[in-house]
Image 1 (cartoon, rainbow, N blue to C red):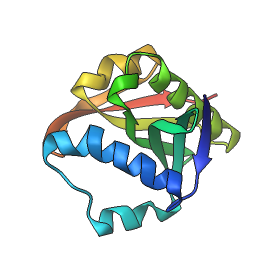
Image 2 (tube, helix red, strand yellow):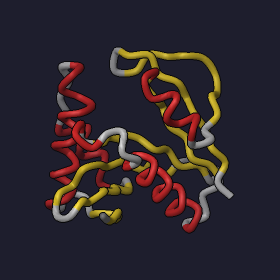
Image 3 (cartoon, rainbow, N blue to C red):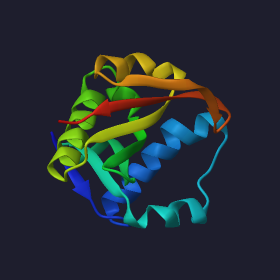
Image 4 (cartoon, rainbow, N blue to C red):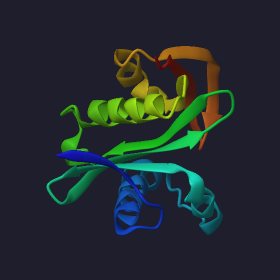
Length: 143
């Protein structure tokens, strides 16, 4: 198993995109627009490979004041509950630390709160609606 930063519009990018569609969008009846995907050109794409298959991925979006946003975290259904999500997030945190980011944050769905709390993310603010679901802002200081 290995985790790597991958290039936008690479074969690996499109594999992670399919996983994102299956895990995050399809259950909500949502699709990505060309405009949504075009905005990802300067974001950091990370993929988790098991042998030659991509089984998880996430995106990092640099923000202001040393902060970076983690988004679109997904793990293939058959691989959930095996620690892959944790390894993926820890890799992303280490990458962000190496690039001198001081804080990582995300907008997490309610069903993912426990996952992020186990990784020492702190809840900030009140619940809000994003893509039709309740979400929470979670923050972790990197350092």
